[in-house]
Image (cartoon, rainbow, N blue to C red; front, top):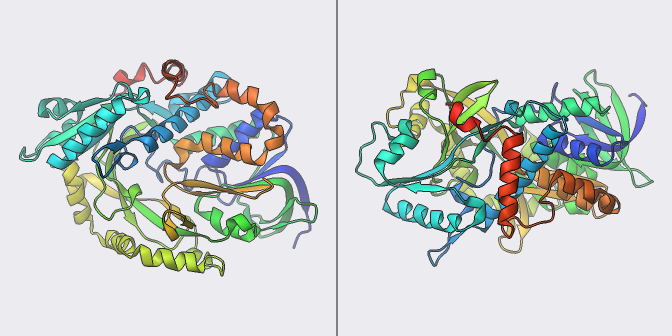
Length: 499
């Protein structure tokens, strides 16, 4: 064992979009801060943030129907969609600031303009979509949304989906042209290149084995490098941003806030089109409605993606189950995460979610042909030979005891768990995840750097003009932000040209 020990101000665990965002924010706010990053893989953005491991939807709540629930009285609750959209606008402003300041270049390398659409079939769903459209367009954040149930219009919007469709069931769609496709893997790599230039110490192939409190209140990490040597590193503040790997490290920290929390891993599969002629016929992200009993993150969608400067087409996700917490994790991750303090929470979650577990196991067992049948609900003429299967990333959903859901409630959002003194924070959960990286990391800064916040606020406002302001109540500011971020990120002129 090596006795090598280093001290630093901040340690970030995991080189994904979350650590990349927090590190970049801190370096802008406090240029002299010493930051060290540990990543167990060989490069940045390789796990949950990788472009093939997530849907890459700039989640602005323009098309995800699970954010707009129908209430018992028939009205549509759009509060979640408003919340997610406001968060995405914060991310867009920060990315714009980085491009304007030349901290990252070539925004087309990570963000492209792309229409976001919702599509439904059947009378009941068409009625719901129309009500949702009316509720959303009355809100200034969703101005410009279009609705149609006219087959000729839909044929123009989504020719691949409409071709070969038998017209016995009503079909409707909404379209928002201000949507985007975001390559979070590419963005994470750009941000880490920038951090490297700013003398941040980034150590790949370094696994954090343990984390414990030192006598002076700082945190000591036991880190194993790629040759198996153990190093000791201490920092005043630690951020655990290791995707599914965050929960075991949070548990090792021993902070009371990390107790009574469990994790439930859900894996995903996508079908990827290998026929360029088919790929060329579709240019949108089209979200449908989740099947009854399916988890929210398995809402079927047909997505145009821009990866490695190439247009591709993905359909999914098909949910699945694996006990691993990371794609590169261990089969013992789930069992190892059960502790005396969360065993009751975990058992309660198991009992409550038997139907979900059954659904996930059924999904794992699906043959390619069965998956093709689901794809044909979107593309009636889809041929098996044009599509290949791709295993996407692992997501670990948070399980905790809540007032509303009782013991062992499965959460489908992103959660920051931090110590009362702000010295350590962990990011758990998944969707809408990466799209809200900036507001989530600003929340970490607010909780964990309260003494510095007042001095930092003017700079935060310079980076994010809407910081601390409700966009819904400021329609003029929404227009300004849309115009300026669209200009800086090259989104306004591209929509017509990248067909």
